[in-house]
Length: 125
Image (cartoon, rainbow, N blue to C red; front, side, top):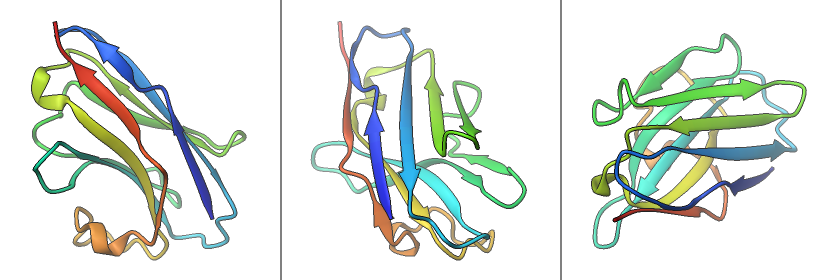
């Protein structure tokens, strides 16, 4: 499995960014692709995920109403649209695959067996 993130950068507070995660090599059916982020000195935290089998999406409370996850099945790509960005959104954003998504413990990083290299998002004036 290979995951390649892109789209990070520097943005002012209140601005928007869209991250992309191009996935390849996934053979399972009931998997989920999640977005996580990690700020310096902090633990990695789940931000959003989308289930492959039914397209169900989930969001962390801190991003609900501001972030939208979507997918392009033909392109095997998952997107994370981020708007109304805040300095607290700063961090390295990773996409990851939970090969056996069950709808439980979905914010546990240990469930995700494949990870991308990450893309830096910096929200600053």
